Image 1 (cartoon, each protein chain N blue to C red):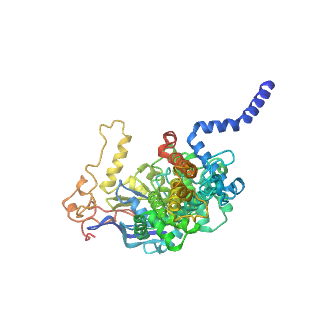
Image 2 (cartoon, rainbow over the protein chains, first blue to last red):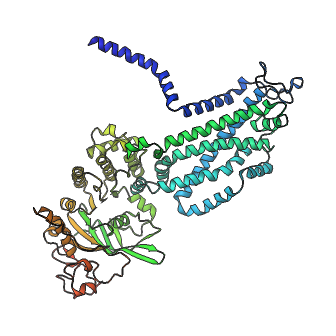
Length: 301
Length: 330
């Protein structure tokens, strides 16, 4: 008996020692898309945060060594004025991801507020949603360019210019969720218990919409990064002295046949981040939507 | 007699449609004394739930209109009370338990918090104090290991337990009136009996009056002090529970009781039923709405509507039988 107990405990200890690695392997095997996409995203976030230490000054010119292909010293090659594409790509990640995060947060906060008010207070609904429809009717890029042209280019303006056309989409989705949730029996029950409006909204309605909001935020994040790149590419975004993936691609376009790496590396970075964010959004949507999880639904209903 | 706790006077609830308004509950009047249990009985669509929603002020205002003499609760007219005043009453003096315990709890919030939320909202007590009270309430509704269960989410509880949580939530602030809209319909028969017994016990302990809505006459016999039978939006008979079961006077009430009593006979060939169906609300309302289905209908029944008339002490019925048409119909 004693032997069984001791061997049991050591066995369990061993299992525990293995379990972190084993659990990681199991996690990757079980949800490969989630593991890979969040891995890529985390890598880029780390790169963006650490770029001052990982990369040199992105503005240093070195005309004699311009348009050099990737090599052991210049991993990503150099551009038309001899700046390091590696340094600039890493610094560019800061702009791209920074704009992505800022727009996702702004859009989510404003969109959720607008959507909840429109969905819960029927009187406000018509006015607010018609205004949102009007904003949606304007092409996002046109609106952003107009805003930048109007007040000049700065990070704040770019984030605003990209957020404004995204907000109606978030607001619409939140409103739709609220319209469904407000009819739920537990919301009615909370009203019956004399709950105040703000506690009904915050405690009973908003948590039910959290899943779709999170998923929508990932899509906003991805499209904001693309929109920032487009604006910079068109010259209406980040100023030329600040490296961003968009203006790097714009500059690299002229040398595409001669030095494809100038455009290639920022484009690859943008594609990887956008892809991983979108995949992450898809996985979250599947995980958070009970109707797409037949086994869980079978147990709970 | 002292002033009743709740006095519903000539209440009419109409569905406002494009063409005008369609009355669904018609000049309904009743009273509930403090600590009393009144059962509202009737088949689906007769206006039981609408009456409850009107009292608690949750009729859908865009399509429903409540009008008439008023709903007086503790001397205050609820029909003319503003939204904030109603909110303060709800959950505090006036509480409600719904039919569906499965969906009436927020699936993403711990049940203890859902109870303590009611206390915090109305009493402004600290969260911690309210949570202690929530555990005490869960204990009171006989949820075993209440302190641990308070941290459970609704999906971790059975239907009966969830309904106990709903009862704990409704009774958290010792309301003067509890409205229970078919509280046990969604539960197993054995659990039904437990939940009803618990509700009755707590009601007695707290001195809460109960407006119990049901179509189960077994529940009525068990719980009620008085019974109000509704048919097609009108009160057809009102009586203390023993009298109603011993001497039902309205043919509709008799029909309901006969349908149950026959189950006691050893050899039933065919279930007795009340022929026909409830008239649609849009139908022209002349005479007694039950006349078409009534085996004892007389010529007058199709022409003049009977009003509630006395049938003994505290017993009244709206029927021309045993009630000579000396009064003018309402």
